[in-house]
Image 1 (cartoon, rainbow, N blue to C red):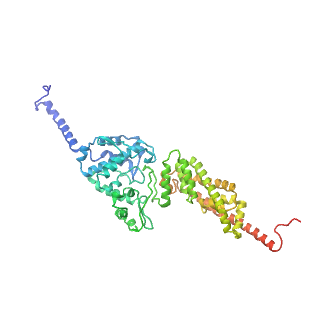
Image 2: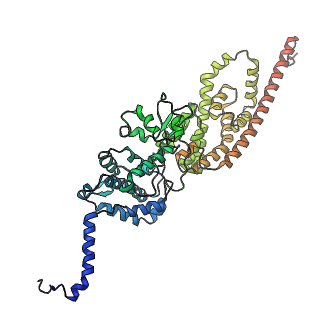
Image 3: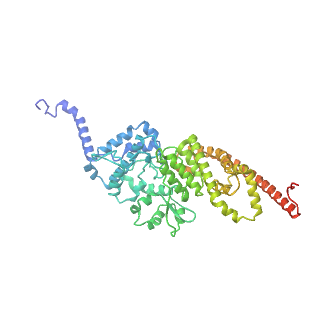
Length: 488
C-alpha cells in the first residue's frame, strides 16, 4: 500500500515539501518539550485589559468571554504528568492563575451579582476542568496550593472576587518573576489601610485572612505582630504596641468590580460588628426584611445608633421599599422604648426628682405641648434617636402625640438616608456614610442646626412660663390667698 510513495529524496516533490515537513516536526518538538504556554499570555491580556487598581470590569468580560474560555480550555489540556515535570515556580504560578481565572469565570457565569457569596456552593462547585477531572476553588487553594507549597505569600495572590481580598494583579503570574510578584503583592496588601492598619492607640488591625490561615504565616497568633511589621509601611509598623492584642478588620465580600467604592480605613469596633451582622442579613432570602427589622429594633433598644442601620435599609431594599421598611421599624423602636421607659422607669425617676420644682415645671410644660418639642428634637442632631426614645417616656407627653410627631418628623431624614444607602455599592461604604456626596448631608445638617436653635428657644420659653406660673401661684398662697378665686 506504500508503493506509490516516492522514495527518491531528490524528487522535486519531496524537495518542495522539505521546508513544510521541517516546520511541522519542529512544532511537534516544541509542543512535546514545552507543553503548556508558561507565559500565560491569554490570561495576561485579559487582566491587563480589564483590571485596574485591583477592580475588574466584569461586564466587559461577560460580554466577550471567549479569551477567558480559551485560556481555561488550555488549562484543561495539562496532564498530571506534564505538571509534575515543571519547576516549583512554574507549578505555583500555574495554580494561582488557574484559581484567579476560574474565579473570574464563576463571576462572569453568574453576572450580574453583587458578591461571590450570592453564588450557591461558590467554593465547592466543581466547575474547573483540571488534570483530567473537575475540581473546585477549594480544591485548588487547599489541596493543591496550600498542601504542596509552603509559601504564605500565595494568600496575597489568590483573589476570590471580594473587595477585602488582596487586589487582583493586572498581569498573570509567571515563574521567571514569581518571587518578585508575590513580594510586591504582600507590600501592596499591607499598605492598604482599609485592610491592615495600626490605630492611634497602637492596636494592630489585620485582615481576617491572617486569622483564618494563621498557621500558614506564623506558629502562633502571638507572632502576628512581628510578622506584620515586615510588611507594613514603616510609619505604621513603628506605632504597634506589642502589649495590645491583634484585632481583625471587617471583611467586605462586596464584588471587586469596576466602579466599586471602598472606605479609606477599615471599620472597627461596634461598626465592624454591625457590618458583619448586616452582611449576614444581606445573604438571607425572603426573610431578609423581617430579620433586618428585628435587628433594627433590637439594636435601637440597646442604645446602638440607628444611622448605619437606616442607610443599610436603602442598600438592602432600595429607596422606595427601604423608606417604607425603615420608617415602620424606626417608629416601632421609638414606641417600644417610650413604653419601656414610661412603665418601667417612670416611677423610679419620679421618686428621684420629687421636690425638684424646676424639673417638674418643665415636665408639665412638655406634657401640655409635648408633640411640638418631640418634632423639633427629632430634627436636631444634638438629640440622638435612641436617647430620645427613652427620654420622652419619662415626660408627660401623650403616647399618641409622641408616636405621630416622631413618625412625621423622622420621615424626611429617613428618606434622605435611605436614598443615600441605595446608592452604596457595598457594605463598607455604609460605614463611611453611604453612597451619595456631601450635599444631601449638608442640607440635613443645616436643618438640624436650625431645629436645635428652635427647640432650645422653645423649651426655654415653655419652662420659663411654667416656672413663672408656679412661682406666681406660690406667692399667692404665701399671702394667704389662692391662685384662682374660690367660689363664694
